[in-house]
Length: 173
Image 1 (cartoon, rainbow, N blue to C red):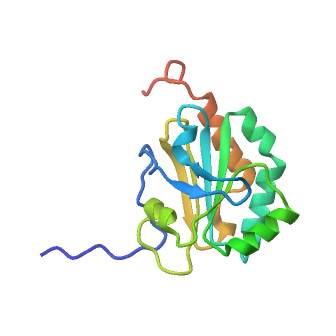
Image 2: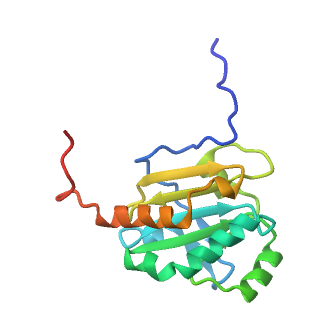
């Protein structure tokens, strides 16, 4: 009988080149819901999972994304920020610090768990960058947002994905 592998809270259910799981979540700063697949074949995605506003580094990353949003748009990339924290607190914060990209609410962390697998409280932070077809290029899952790539590194990934072209990408040697 084979033993189950040990539980690793910072592992991922996804591997590079996998297709990201589709999801639909209610938007906090827009009306209605947002579906990940509404961007398919149109925009690359940066998906940022954060546990809520009690994480100062998460708030800072959201503000950094907002400041650089036009640069993400210039490389055909949308940012989807997904919080599992208090909806009311998130609404209040967004009223004071509006952001131009969709902020979604995943109150029970169901979508997060589809991306990283089983996890216990406190929920980790996660960053996933994928192309316009939903193919995952890079991911980072961490217990603390300070362990995520910096905003310029994330923007570099978005730019790399945008310039990548199967017809003009260097051949594998």
